Image (cartoon, rainbow, N blue to C red; front, top):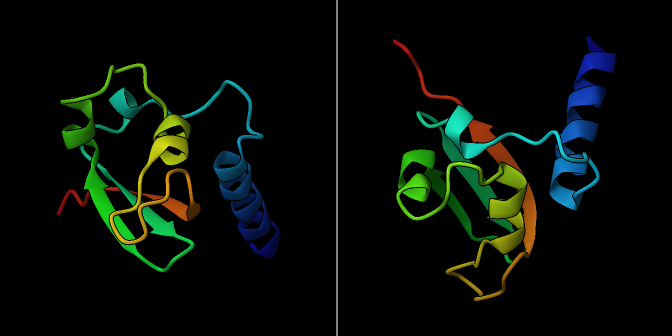
Length: 91
């Protein structure tokens, strides 16, 4: 279990730093979920993917959103410290 947690952490870091290659999650595959972003300044936001898809092509990846996100707290672009896909509950 500990090894699995380490692998997940590495995958998240790779996605944030752009090392995961071309096989990144497309927004169109997670339309009912949210993306949680934490900026280095401490500001955080949870953005519904459906809202992003109203403005972006369905081929856009989570990685592209993370790299181009502009913080409403400090105004910096691409200053993301952490990102999570928050899966919608079916309950």
